[in-house]
Image (tube, rainbow, N blue to C red):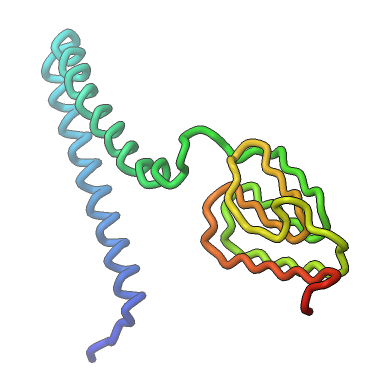
Length: 158
């Protein structure tokens, strides 16, 4: 009888087979490497391990750089975490220290006046974020979500 395997089950099974084969190849290669080194003697084995170790460590280092490259490119300035110094100086003002991925919505009503920069959205420098005006939004990282600001004060339409 023919068994029908779902796509996810087939992929999981294939992944397990690939991992098992890779592990078996690694174990056999390590055993052959140890046999080879044992036959070389201590002095020559030391030289072989130094030479091969250089190339293996170089390959692992390059692989690590290849994995880290996309993250490094997204962060803007490497090694500079978003500042924890943030100030909100008005009602309804919002400061997002890192990236805005969930969206920001402000709704300010009944404020008599709007100070300079109030009711605006923008991206400020990472250090010392400050949202000064009512309904202002400051994002210290990337804004990947919508930002909406609604200001209703004296003399404005609701």
